[in-house]
Image (cartoon, rainbow, N blue to C red; front, top):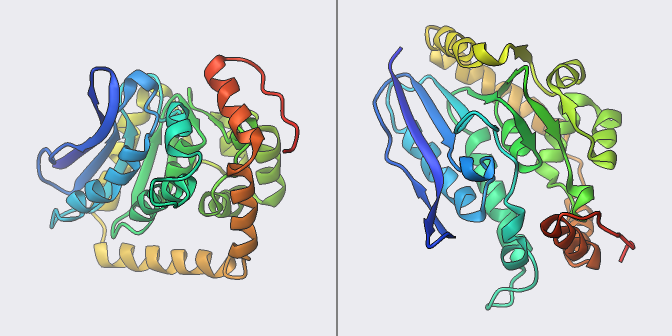
Length: 285
């Protein structure tokens, strides 16, 4: 079937990431593709790229015949290594010039990106190859369906950096894998392979790496041939049921604990250790 594609990539001048670009859609058709296009950093997402996702999703949604969207990582190496930790000292620590928390501003950019994916009017499929970490998993969690190549690996590593995983992503993680497995992933930051991800419910299918794109193409073609209003109704119903299950969450308390992480010495130590390629020494401060 005919397709339309769009990319979100960092804009770079003199090797410094200063902004992001939403590349104009290419083509027209029923199948849309959103590409995380930062292969030089294993498709890590910086704050500007998060800010660009809602515009990219809106551009795809403007296609009148759109029936499905696929999220892919550019290149052969990774779906997404997660958020770009190298920008954390400037973008996620301390206060902005207006006195607001940089961490809250960064989180808002993430949340708006994820909401744009989750609230798309058509099904969204994450086609996952290679490493999928942290923020990359959060993107995949907000898709409706996750298909992994056999080479895919997954980890949720906030505890290795001293920060809190966002509640929206944690809610979706718990709904897929259950509380005990979610805690295991979050407490250990361990890496799981594609088959393990399938067993715990993190992904719905695993296919040979070389067959991933063709398999996803067949799935999107199948969806595109069915009644779009019926599919939209199903998506709205399932999303409403899932949201109701988490309605009693105490967001005030959760956000207070998250802020404590961002304001901690451990967060600074975790980022410094990552940048210096050494083991962090956390003190609970």
